[in-house]
Image (cartoon, rainbow, N blue to C red; front, side):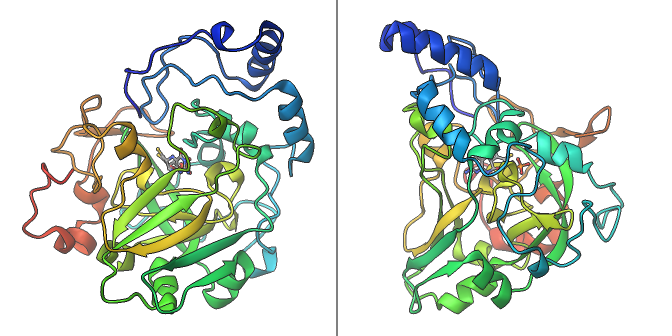
Length: 349
Ligand code: MTE
C-alpha cells in the first residue's frame, strides 16, 4: 500500500554477485520477483524490497519451519480450547447477518495480505511455514493498573472464543465474509484495568526476520504497528481472533492472535500480535508511516471517501463476479456510527 517513491536498486548493485545469483534462484523458488517490478499487494506500488536473506539463512529458517504444507494446522492453540474444532474447516452458519455467503475457506487462507512474508497474495500461505506460532506470548502494558504477559492458552481459558461472522473489506476494494473465532478485545483490556489517562491502544506484530523474511528489507519500518482509539477498542465488535472456520489461525491469517475490526479497512486488523499498550497519544501506524497522505489513523470503510489509488464506491467480493456497492462502515453503522458523531470523516480518513 506504499507509494511509488522508492528507487529500484538492482540487487546486483548492492550484493556480491554469487549471493545475488543464488538469491535470485531462491526468490524465484518462493514466488517473489527481484528487480524493479511495480507490485500491488494491499496497494503497494513500489519496487519490491530485495530481502537480504542469503539462501543459507533461508534454508536454515525453512528447516526450522513448523509446517511444510501451508494448509497444515499450525501448532498454536490446543484444539480442545477451540469450540467446534474439527478436522474439517466448519462454521455454524453459511451466511452473515445480511444473508451474504461465507467466502470459501480456500480463498480465505490463500489470498492474503501479510507483508512480512511477501508482497504477493500467495506469499503468506507459502512462506507462512517460517512462522512458529507456539509457544507465543502477548504483553499487555502501558497505562494500565494490571500489566501482564499472557500465553495464548491463558487467554483462551480466561476468554473462551466464540464465532463471529464478519465482512472483511480491504482498502484495495475487495472483500470477504469470514467466520472468525475469538473474544472481544474489551475483555482483555478490562482485565488490564486502563488508567484514566489511557486514550488509545497500540498493537505490535512480532519482529523476527528469521520468521518473517521481508522484515530483512529496509523499505518499510518494522514491526507492523496499528492503533485504535480506546472507545473503538472497547466496542463489542472489536475481536481478538485465534481462529477461523472452527480451526486455529494459520500463519497466513495472523497466527496465533490477530485483531479484527470489521468496520475498518483490513489493514487495521493487525496480525501475529505480541504487544498491546495503552497509551495517551494517537499511535502512528505502519501505513501512516509508509505513506501519510494516503493512509489516516481511522480507516473507516466509507464509500464516499476515496483512496488516492482506489475508488471506494464499490467492491469485489472474492468468489463473486461483478461488483457490489460499498456499505458505510462496512455495514456496521448501527453499532459504530455513534463513535464518530460530529467528526468530519473526510478529514479523519
Ligand atoms: N498485519 C501485519 N502484521 N502485516 C500485514 O501486512 N496486512 C493487513 C492486515 N494485517 C497485514 C496485517 C491487510 S492490508 C489486510 S487486508 C488484512 O491483514 C488481510 O487479512 P487476511 O489475509 O487474513 O485476509
